[in-house]
Length: 101
Image (cartoon, rainbow, N blue to C red; front, side, top):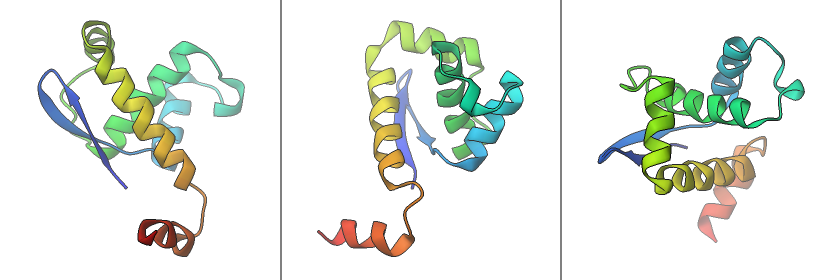
């Protein structure tokens, strides 16, 4: 499931998943389980944007600047990540049942 995140007035898709985690591990050079700090979390957010759109137009520093300038960017990414984590790893039937409720 993709969420849309508004950054600098433009909507961008955001998707958490194995692709985002593996990309974050590659960028940071360590397994995700060893990484629990602000930099790792911001890299993961960046990777969720790239995972959803390989042509995401901002680089990492530009994303950080956007987060500094507009707290809503981080709030949107946090909410999207939280919702996606609540569904992640559950069988599709379970996730579909929750949609019907």
